[in-house]
Amino acid sequence: MEGAVPMSDVAAFQPEALQLPELSPLALKANPFLAEQLFSQWLSLPDTSRLVKSLLSAAKTGEPLNAIGNSSSTNSGSGSPIPSMFPSGCAPPLSPRSVSGSPRTVKQRAGPSSLGSPLKIISEPVREVIPQFYFKNGRLPPDETRERCLFDVDQHFYDHMDGLQQNEFKLVAKDICKLPSFFSTILFNRIDVNSVGIITRDQFMDYWVKGNFLTMDLATQIYTILKQPDHGYLSQDDFRPILREILATHPGLEFLQSTSEFQERYAETVIYRIFHYVNRSGTGHLTLKELKRSNLVAAMHQVDEEEDINKVLRYFSYEHFYVIYCKFWELDTDHDLLIDKENLIRYGNHALTYRIVDRVFSQVARKFRSKVEGKMGYEDFVYFILSEEDKSSEPGIEFWFNCIDLDGNGVLTSNEMQFFYEEQLHRMECMAQEPVLFEDILCQIIDMIGPETEGFVTLRDMKRTKLAGHVFNILFNLNKFIAFESRDPFLIRQERENPTLTEWDRFAHREYIRLSMEDDVEDVSNGSGDVWDESLEAPF
Image (cartoon, rainbow, N blue to C red):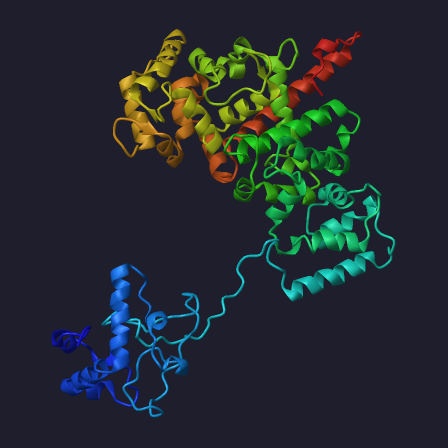
């Protein structure tokens, strides 16, 4: 018969393909000849012959093979595309099949297929319900949190049905939003977009609850409130509203109320310090990730809790600002708020070498924000002094590493370190100090750092060691180098007693005491004279 299948192919046929639910597959496997006889009988049917011929014709012409579409079986009306080998009306019902061919809803039986045949039984699995994991506007708050917030809001707005004014809104910001009190003004302005001067209960609920602030962590809340709506970062100007509020309300800064100039200088210094330590990318755009990694949010809460602003050592201390600004004032002899190389070389009683000052002014470590070429502005000086007096901090290590890395290849070689140490050696000879040869110094540096790769030092090596600041001092700060070599036991004991204080904290404390004593002496000397000499007046 034309189109008949050779017996060799029949012998290779497997019993499961016959789809005979009334016969056990084990019985068919135990009697392979029975399966061959049944298959031979099925092939001898006229409908089977027509089906095979149509499939062969379709294969020759390149048409897609579709047993259902090409079959002209007389039994097609019964819903079975394969010719039946059972008498009419005696065929058992076939297993139900899914009409959908989507892989999302149809899953074949587990395990490798013996034939890869489309005649295999396909089962419909139980549809698995995947919970929602993406929320366009943020995950909804738990019912308990939402209800608690609603109760607190009703309590605060109960006697103010018409809304709250700005001076009444501070309790809402602090008690309900859990924000520092100096965020109340900027939060009020964010909600009162039309500048009406009053916020109703519904306006607050729309902004705070529908804006999904209830599900945000505190850093995300602060970031969202401070940044401009169309920005994905925080700029320096975004911090000015809360600094104005701190200056206007904090009891520790009340004495600055009459000096608007120094209020502005204080606010600028705080912002520069924040970006120096927090904005690690150095782009001037502070991201949410950087904010979360920092201790800025904790410092903000400390400002709200402490009446003495000087106890907030991170960013906000007035004493720290006083030291920074006085140091700048001492170097800026013409008081144009700009300093040059000759001014900076006098820093720390001429502690720095000319070569390192040249590298600072080459701006390889950080581009100056000053608009005057060859001049360093106040913001640039803030970055410099924080890096100089806190060399072991991550920003300080990066700043000075880039200065010493002459070829900018990311590693420090012995030649680069020797280039800077040569001037130190010359200065020691001029000061009648016993010179230390570079070979000996290099061995000491290697022991202090313990680089991963012999022959050069990487930025990663410098960040791993706790002695990075001392290494930099050896290379370009003679005063601190000598002080380290002849360490004062009293200072060592102080460091052990206050391990949480940074190098900058200790420096600022010492300098503030010194500057305060100098101011007291000047006040006494100026008060004893008949004529007031304004040139002797301190910058505050």
